[in-house]
Length: 241
Image: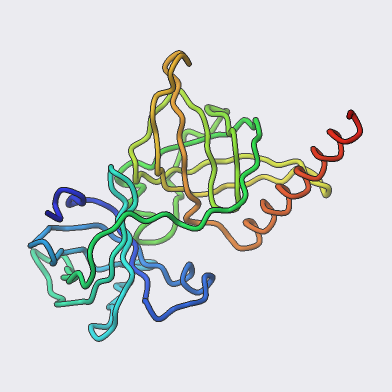
């Protein structure tokens, strides 16, 4: 049963299946929420908006749809069955064309680290603002470090905190990396894919988040830092041996 895996309110991403270029797929990803589950192969979602404008997705195409649920990330192929309004809410019906399956995004090389970071979970208002406009101007609570990043990659980060986070939730986290050109500050929106209490760690939580809003230049800068740091560690290890 579809409703065993996805629920109304779950965030989803919609991408035109014909797009092959990763950068283009990332740039043209549309985010919205499940409004209702009609049957095992039909769901209602609110029509996505970008900067307040409705994005009327073509009805003659196929789309990759990603579901962020409490049980992890799922993916299937969908088509647009219908569009209409319900109590002034713009609704789009999606018809599943393939079975729902667990999905693992491409992994980047991960670097173990120990970096203080500031983390803020978006509330419902902030999440809706981000989904509709791509902005997160109302996000607050980043005055002092409240978590420690323990590994980082070009695709996401793992961090330890005293707070747990709902899987699928959007978070804003800020951190700095020391690079050859100086210390660079990053503000990145991520989506939580894992959050579990750690044994024998005084109630602390291990969390993992995937970057969902990051400029290509920033991603490349992080990847460059990772490789430079890895080379530095190897060199130091070689000199000591």
